[in-house]
Image (cartoon, rainbow, N blue to C red; front, side, top):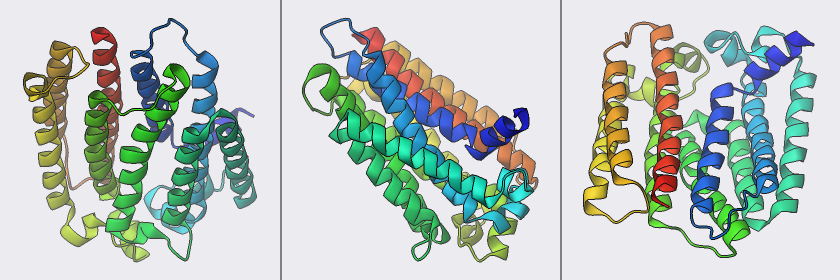
Length: 300
């Protein structure tokens, strides 16, 4: 049983689970910051989280089911590629995740249902023929940006705001969060393929790292991310936001410093070093949500 849970944890791709959980928590807390009462609406948050985690497991699991041969080269530690899970087990897991996701979304309201359905459709088109959009770097990036950058932030905030406050609106803070995560989604879409060029080339997956080269993608992505952090650090000086200005600005300067420190530790000639750097980008992604939520709560 212990080995099953270890394999399930790898199957669920923990960094995506943490990312989904933190994004929901941040958007929930931002919606709460506009509430007049003191109720925490715990059931709303837990139900919404379980629905989105079910969709998350379906999407990452489906991707593994369609990429077993590629993963045997790029990610041999994944349960399907290593043989720890059978194909039947993988199908059962994603089927359960899909069912949980849709049932809870139908129960909890239209904005959550719209979030889940759009995410599932794009996640399916990303992996499955005849679309298999992951073969094309533009459409692969579009799927990730659309889900992580737009659908999750805008629709889940509307979901929580509607359920907690009885109205629907996109606030300036949420708009800037959406812009920030949109940029993160683009960079994650580029960087996720940097350690996987060997397997992708073998199976004719046209990623940006193959088309432009790992080094060029690395430089462009880090330049864009550095610009984002500088912009956000200066933002409270120019724009009225419902966020604590010092926490917001100093937090983003700290993220910029961590980014440059991480860049200095990367060896682009080593797959393991690139993979570790990619995980540091996910860490900054997690911190971004936390920083927006903290600055918003301290301001309220």
